[in-house]
Image (tube, rainbow, N blue to C red):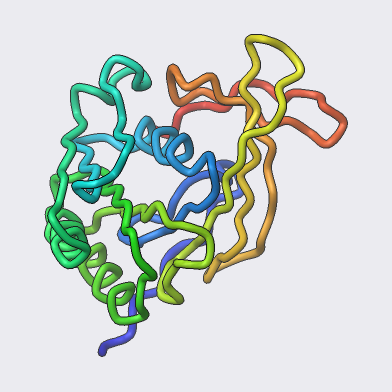
Length: 200
């Protein structure tokens, strides 16, 4: 197995960005919301791969602006099919983001194969996993939870970077309304910063 190339750390100006050409993981009850947030920040086709028996799937009418028209949902018969489909999608350079929901523990071998596919296609991958079912090969792992909101129009989430091969670990409280890629980072004192700019 040849070594994977070094990739840039998360940019300080954009701490919620996922390093391209790598595969990342998200766990927790708000992991699908985190995936939709990332979908708003990636151009091109979006591939979302689910097991056939998955009880929930993204509803096109409720997706953030610009995501529904680019989203392709794929349901697979087995875990083997899901991982194979994810690899093939990651190898396609035209794809902007690949999201997959494996139902079983990701082995180190499976994780490495996904990383090599992402490297080959220069495509970003995000595996939505159950807690404790991630792969050691993942570039980053995020723990995503919904928080009580202080106001009816506020949608607070806590996104914690619990694994990062290229940098430090950190926790953010994010106010993201789910409509566009704009969001607020909420300070510990509850004060909001200005809306973040969408990366070019």
